[in-house]
Amino acid sequence: MNKIFLTEKKVLRDFQNQNPSQMYSNQKKLYKRYKKNFEHYYTFLFKLPLKLFNNCELIDFGAGTGDNTLFLAENGAKCTLVDMNPEAVKKSKNLFKYYLKNNLKNHKFIVSSIFNFKFKKKFDFVHSRGALAHTENPKLAFKKCASFLKKGGIIIYGDPDRFGGFQNMLQRYVIYSLSNNEKEMINNCELFFQNDINRSQKYSSRTREEIITDRWIIYKQNDPSFDNVMQWFKSENISLYSSYPPTNQFLIDSHLNFPKKKLYDLKGTNSINELFWMRKNLNDFEVLNKFIKINQNFIKAQNKLSSIMSDTRIDSLPDKNKINNSLKNYLKSLNQIQTLEKTEIESTKLFLKEIKDLLFHVNKKSKNGVLKTINKSKYLFKGNAGVRHVDYIGIKN
Image (tube, rainbow, N blue to C red; front, side, top):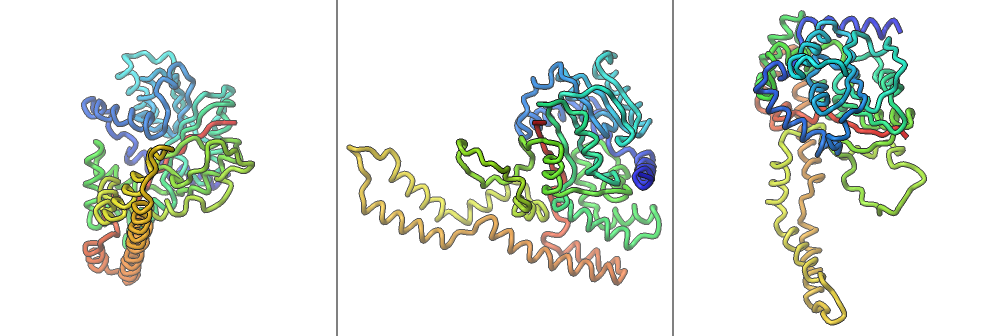
């Protein structure tokens, strides 16, 4: 336990130097915009109608300055906010006062480590997003959080994914290898990852220093994999309800099938998705638009085959020649198809070569070489630089 609390002390120091959790709610105009985003997250991505939060008891571990929790409070949740940073808890209380017009009777603000937290009550919702990966033992932290969940209650847990956050870890490796102190670390972040910082600033009111602390300087960033989280869920008798990004979207078993074992008992079920998450640099619209353009023959052939067979009935059978010709064209198009997985694998091969070039220059302590490699790379540290954050929604059985 000494190591756990030593890590907490170091992480707390970083959060007290910079406050990366206050993203937008300190600016009323920005918060209005982000309320719409939150409504989209919880309703359409997490599949949780907002009326579920009305009059429920909710606890948020690692609540920071209350930016995430405030939206749920505005939708009727009675919130208990827990954070080890006294300054963050003070800010969250002031935030609630401002937006809820001093009506704090249903809300509690507690300064505490997750590991030291004690409370007799259990909650309808347990909420923790972007906190447990900063602990020495995320598995133990999750177990502690889940212990406060009622039977039939819902847990909302989110952190960077080990694969989706791979490029972020690579960036940390570069910074730590080429810096001798924190000032030099900040300068190197600006030198190598300026575009990344600029992109982050578009989506929040955080300063550049706060973004740098959150991404690269924070002492602990112990990201779990999908398999890790599913094992945690299983240990606490929690079933996966939804996630974002979605997992195993290609599974299409009948809704009448009730398997004796859960699919997520199998390790590696999300490996293909994690391949996408690790290298993702385009948004979904750009990816799908590219797929559609290069696979027009397949799309047309598939539509033709299905349209010929549609509305088959006793007095209207489709022409057998048309069926045969359509099957022939469909088979031909399948031989030409460029699946997302196939194109992703080819892109990942180039991505891995770019990583190899980067590491060569890092090991040579050549900042110019690192910068040139980053600038000329097609995939490395480009765009989103991976799908960092994954949210899991589970129900206590």
